[in-house]
Image (cartoon, rainbow, N blue to C red; front, side):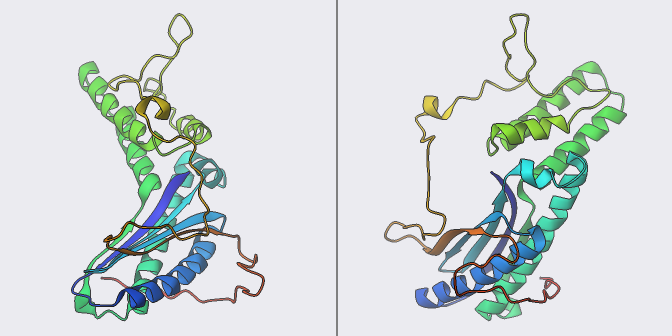
Amino acid sequence: MAALAEGYIHLNPYMASRARLVEIGELSQAAAIDIAQRVYGGNVTLHVKIEEGSAKAWFGVAAGLATAIGMYPNLRTGTIALVNDAREFGGYINSTFIEKSKAKEEQVFRVERRTKTPGKIARVIKRLDELNETPAKPEKRRLELAMVRQELEAIERDLQQQEIEVLHAGLVYENLPPLRPQPNKTGVLGPTLGMPPRPEARQMGLPYDLTFDANVRSAEPAGSPVVYIKTVFVPTIGIRLSENQPLPPRKLEPPLEH
């Protein structure tokens, strides 16, 4: 599952009780579900986290990259659209959280609209376009391609195999060599140029079969600044979130600029 977007807000100074921050979290999460439905059409996962102190909030959207890109003719078109969607989601949820918190303008310390995986892919496409169109000495091109492959490795760590296939299928260039490992004479895939082979989760001693209830708030250790954290599935527009909770139409106001 790929991270498609994230809104980040830092209020400082901002004093509020834990109960008040939880209330803000619940209100903002309900709004974020509505925004995600209208920006992405639903069928995404929403992750919300709020910390006390100088209040910080994160609103992340994730979904299968293959599904998200599959709505568009190709990787390039889909990436541009998803980057724009990420900016739109971030702008709306950031302004909504500020509204729900009743923070004054001078309390808004930092606001970010993060484009996450689509933004990373867009940067890779831009670099590959330049390499494909600009002549360069073989050694310089080899080093630049190795850097691009490092960026791809970082992107792939958060993707499933099907999503990786979709990614590489859209990164084929006339004047550039393949960007993924190619079979050697024995038919075995060799390591990517410039990068060591990536260890599997089992080899690293990491959990590789994690499951979670997407509708249950996660427990935080005692003393943690996190006062609200929740992951929920966002259904498509028209599907009720619960038996008695219809989705009324809501007009989205333009995002505030801070």
